[in-house]
Amino acid sequence: LLLLIIPVLLGSSFYLSNFIQSYLDKNSITSMIHIYSLLPYFIVWMMFYIAYQLSANIHIDVQAAIISSFIASLVWYIGKSAFIFYVVHNKTYASIYGSISTLLFFFLWIYISWAIFIHGLKFCDLLNKDEEIEHI
Image (cartoon, rainbow, N blue to C red; front, side, top):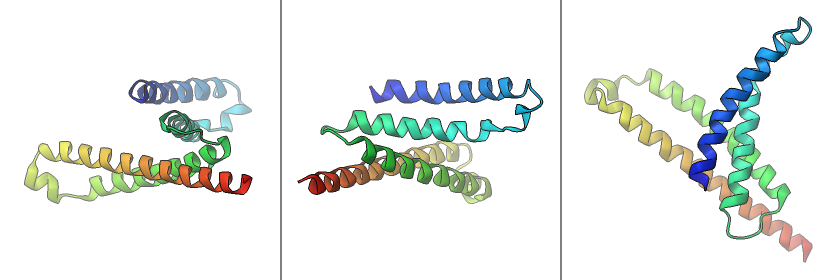
């Protein structure tokens, strides 16, 4: 289910951000609003939220899922920027491995993304357990 939902939501984030920005650019008053830079972040945040709600085997509280998905998506965006900086400025792998270095960087990014996702899910479980303890 996650393998089906995540690519669809990623594609819809690109489509919606372009559609909304083109709609805002039609008017002179709203052309100053650049939602194009913020909308993909909110869609990634909602992707993490939906993934955390669907992937857990227990009931996850909405507040715990919102907080942990916000933090995980923030860490994911910071990690994405740091990874792009690393790939652009790293000349060692390209000179040693050639075109295979692209594949190595791709696998490294998948590893980093899943590590962020899993640690965010652990944080969601921790917040969920804290709320259950407070409820008792």
